[in-house]
Length: 320
Length: 195
Image (cartoon, rainbow over the protein chains, first blue to last red):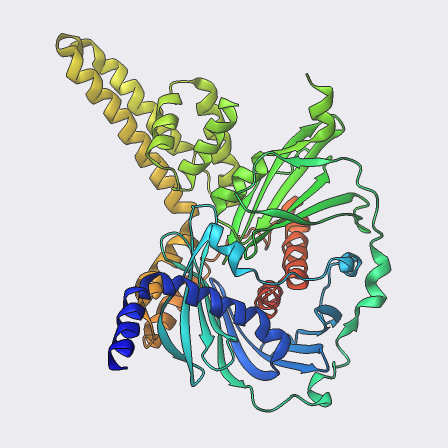
């Protein structure tokens, strides 16, 4: 009997290394489920270079429906209410017509897929918001994306803290709970939007979706990135049609925006705001010049390369 | 195709993200007037963005090259080593110019580096007990050196000022809709509105 337990002990010790990766996968699987199953309320901070803000969150899971309200506590009282992942109302400026893309629901976190492009590992434990946490590192296997360090609640697997790191391990953004309550369920009053929160239905008609005029093709995206959304909208102010494509690798996302430009002065730009980069460059097509803008939580070199790889299908077929 | 690759390498060098091979490719191609032209256009575009013209730095590179060309006459006697030394010097001067340029417009990244240094490798640090250090670093970096303060999204008229905030917002909000992590994209979107 003793020999058997000793043997299992030895075996478990021997298999400890690969188990780390499996353990990390299990934690991420739990994380994916946690927000669908766990009610909570709390306060978190968000920090990136040049900005620091505090927010309250109420999250209720009842009869299979997830209702969530977020409210910024400092500065302007920005607010958003979501039911089952669909935005009901927002305060402040909403991108007109965003509600159109509702047919594609949010995707679940897939740790299996992630392991193709990221190395997952449990690297330790910590304490966040007075709760015990386990640290899961998500390290990219190539230089085309950023890494994460997640501190997941030991009890519920909710993300208590999330750090975004570049390839040199520099911190680009911090998301961290300062207080979290998972025992009491938020009541109706907590989840009730304030008067400032404007329903989505009201603004939807402002930017009618239009047929994309051209088929765009990205000759290069980092391995694993897949198109999850494409749309074309007419901007009410400028009267131009802006086409957008969104890609994700299961964790990171970037958008490509294409709009015709007439201004000769429109310069090519690149900028980085915390974790988010934006790179613009001009593209000549048979229908005139376009401005290609890549926005996303990816290294600026990746964004630049993506921007350079945009081609119009039309041009591709007319040119031998 | 190789032009595209070269342009990518150029931009990688600008980002200080180039690997050995890319740096070599760029340095090799620098004899080509067209490449230098592209490089200077990149620089000027960036310089305009940051309201800081970098053209003098290019002159340094040119001046060094010119000086080396003059030097070449006495160098002929000991051709081999001098030539390679000259090439090295050109390479070095170009690298210096590159680094000088990179330093200037990547100030926010450097500030980020300071922040990261003060937090001492968050990957390995485990429990963070260096609150004050982070705050000190944070304050410094947020002190008008951030990209937002650099005037890309603020105070500049023109295309970026009109379009870029909208694109950033659309990306952030669409991410919030698609995202699996619900609160993080929201917080990103909210932080864009805080200016």
